Each structure stands twice: as structure tokens, then as C-alpha cells.
Image (cartoon, rainbow, N blue to C red):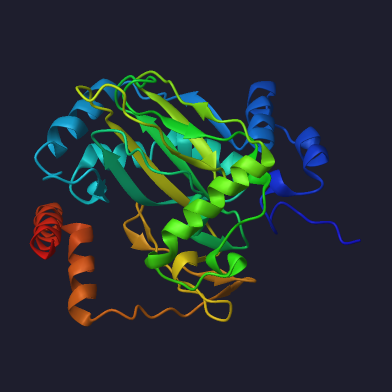
Length: 314
């Protein structure tokens, strides 16, 4: 039988993982983190960021007027430097490279003022990679989070379940079927008897979770409280990146990935070959995206315009 190397799939998922970890030059503490991540699909770490208090306030105060009735802001890194600083925090990037043995590519930020109360899901329904599982999320508490202000919940070990895409459960692509997907995930949890854990963390702690870990937002019990947090999603180098919810068995809907670290498009790669990718959107949309990458003021105005369009369409 051919031996798989950590370069062909995440070494955490390799049948030879135990041997690879034992032979690695990592120190005992890091090995323990890697083992926990492999076993349970997540780790909680303290961010080594001396200016975190200042950065968190820059985010909370800087985004306060930008939510405009919405419960999240996507890609605020384009106009808020503190959001980007957390997304490319060196300690997190280094740890992710240890976990996946490839260079991490931060590609999306989400900022929240309150708990999402989102139903349980896996991020692999929203974005995924080939080879699979080269994706993860990092959730950072910008303030203390407990059982009353809508904490994140997750199911330890659920990352080992088969990856569920619409085509696997007889659903056609598109957001209209997302509720049926959520129902399926709930039945999966019940049938496997998975244990649910609520995440209570202090300001400055981060949850790193594996691509397929089932998670969601718990109910808000105290509606007078905020729950400021930031999620950054990461792909890894030398992969193909796509949106499973919009893909069919014979055609992947490729995801145009901007590396937040470099502000450049990441190269789509499969089996060592670069994949030519042409964004199907109009030249006006593409020009708008390019300008946002380098002009924070324009990025903020376009964000506001996007929210206004959503409100006018209601």
C-alpha cells in the first residue's frame, strides 16, 4: 500500500499520523497541541499579542457605526487595520503551519457584535479545498464570552465524520436548500450521540477549529450584553479552492481567494499544476474588488453601499 505523506493530505488525517508526530522535531507542548487538534478537531490558545486590548477596542469602536442593523461585517480587514492584524497574527499563522504543514492563507474575516445563534453546521459546506480538509477557522474573543451572551458551541471529534456536501444528500446547489442541510446535520448529531460543548473564553483567547468540526451559535440568554468576536477563515497553499454549496458533481464553483497577508490573489493549484481561473463577474465588479484591496476608504464606502442595497431590497 502506498504511504501517504503530509504533503498529500493534512498530516492530522494521515493513517501514519502517530508515526509522523513521533518523528517530528516539535517540542512536547506543541506536540500536545497537535495531538489534541487531531483527536478533537480544535484547540483553545491565548493570543500572544501585547497590544491586544488596544486592537480589540479599535475593532469594537471602529466598526460600531458600520453594522447598520446587520449582525456581522465580512472582510472588515479591507478598511480596519486591527482586523487585519488579528487575521495575520504571527503566532496563529505559525501554529496553523504546524497543524497543516503548509503555508496558511487567511482569506476572509467576519466580525460580530452579538452572538449569531446560528444553527450547527460545518464550514466545509461554505468553502472547501482539493485536496480536502485544507481549511480551518480561528475565532477570537474580543471580550469575555460566557453562557449568557451567546457563546459558540461545537462538537468535539465531529471533524472525523464524512464531509457533507449537497450532492451527497440529494440536494441541488443553491442557498434555497441550506435549511435542509441544517436539518440533516442535526439528525447526524442525534444519531451519533455527539456531545455539545459551549465555549466560555476570556478576552484574547482564540479557538482554532478544523474544517469539518460541527459548530454554531448558542442562544443569547442576556440580551443586554454584546459578544464582540472575530472569525478568520484560512485556506492553505497549493490547493484548489471552491464553494461546495454552489458546486455540482461535475463542476466545482471555484473560489477567488485573496490572501489577506499579501493582498494578492492566491494561485489555484491541483496536482502541482496552476489552474487558470477566470472570475465570471463583470469587469465593473472585478474593478470594484481590486480597488477595495488597496483603498480602505473606498472599501468602507462600498461596504455601506452593499448594506443599503440589502435594506432597500427588503
